[in-house]
Image (cartoon, helix red, strand yellow):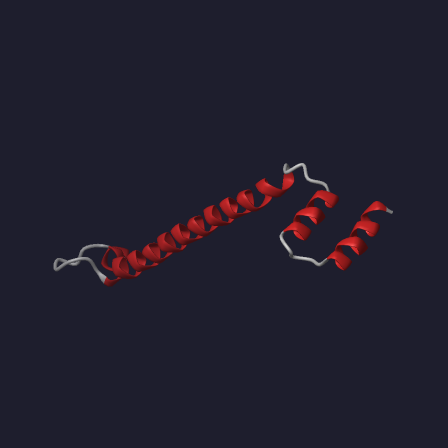
Length: 86
């Protein structure tokens, strides 16, 4: 009886192979997509942390850069500088 479901019935593969094949194909594509997502996340984490972890800049240097780029005004610069130095 098992040969009928997962075997050859004389005309072609039986429905059991079609169902099993569909399930295996779905599992294969889920695995491929999960692997791609994992690789992208690892690469993203590596590039995000690489630039910040070993930059060697202290808080005052970063504050000066932000002031030079006009991201903060002089008043905010002075306030934050006092916070850093204290």
